[in-house]
Length: 607
Image 1 (cartoon, rainbow, N blue to C red):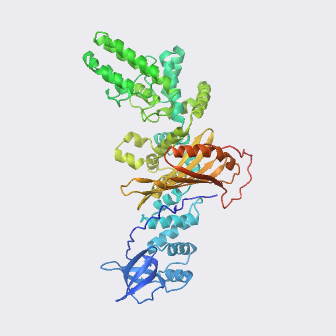
Image 2 (image 1 turned 90 degrees about the vertical axis):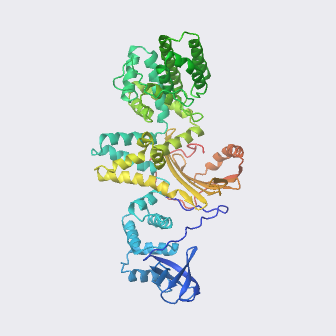
Image 3 (image 1 turned 120 degrees about the vertical axis):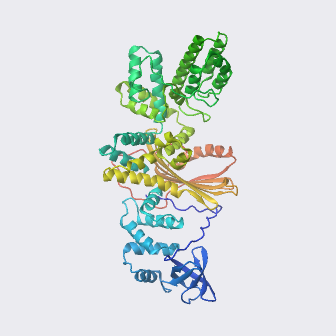
């Protein structure tokens, strides 16, 4: 079953008014004479808009023709390209008058734009024909025509790049395959530079396994613990593995492995590395003045447990009673640093997800042991750990622990992480001038890859992936008083591979904010157990109706107990659940027999 985005209509959310039509010399459109005026001037209906133009020849009111713009200044002038007649007759007249061949592709394009009543030029017709003649295997003619219609409606550049983005961005399945094809192409292509290959593959791994950062945090925490308190062999083993993952530099030793190069700060928002650096650089007199700030900073750390905060506060209190000399200040800074490393190492193994928007324990730990903490630190550690025989038992335990702690908040964080890693916020990140964040996103990495002389298969895979990312952005945006958002998130967790695509339509209030009382949200899900599913959620005056489309009859039974929790959750946010209705797809696809049977019961995750 192939699904793609279609415009959402709702009884409550009114359709968006079309943008004012802008005509250019040479364009053609299908229109109807609505009113005749003196001097061969007429009102012409084009779609849901009307224009006033001068006609080159007198016509009858009510007739439908294809017109061509001959002049736009000082007034719009039109000539008739076709006489009143059937659509097929008019199409033949257009092709003949423009000296165009009567190809199947041109007739398909003409039929589409006459139906949509959109202005189109001869150049655009020829470009549209070339689009149809070179369609990739995963794009149907219907999808291509819909994409071109949206390009004209949105006044987008009529180019191959935009067309590819619109067709790929409208798809609701296949993102996982696109990512896998890209990975395989890069692995086989020796012409890709080593640095680009490493960057792209690391990012693809992070996208494919959205919880690898949490797992990597567990491994880093465990290994840092070994560096602090293990025997000589354990310390050396931990040091080697941390070097392999680039968590520690190659020159690090078992006695000198902390490379904190943070900017000194004791502000409430400072990270642990900045705090330690401030303590180490302060004079005894400065340190005396900083102690109240240090106490306040400890109290505000959500990544520390209550006993850990108490231990740190006691350490500060003991130092307050000592004479403030260079020696006592240095000892205090060293002990405080060691206590933070120990605490965050322990918590990195148990606290997997962020709290209150602050840095996680693993991120705080990174600021203490790295000069320039990298977002990829923990995903690199996860990759290294998975390839080390001596860590396989820890890897299995960690994967089980992560899976057991996945909840709705974790899935939300994973989706945000995937969208960030894919580069959906690339343009916004450019505005914020954050080079480090840019370097860790897939989209700019693909753009860099396409600047290289790579194999055709690699270029094709990279262009397809980039088109999907651009397409989602082109599909999203403001449309008058409405706003549309399109996202597709490939996810792999709980041992299962899932694709979730979201299309949200809502109306905007006069102040520019989203009207939370009215919306329509479509989820397209492709899951291992229940396969393709569509969830249509409509919100009208804060009353929520959910329709679930799936051909698996067992979902009706599974949905009943979950409906109660959904109703309570919505009520907590002042929404009323009208009902959850499970329905089969209207059109069923005949599926090829499978090699091995899979269970038909159970769900992959809760929404």
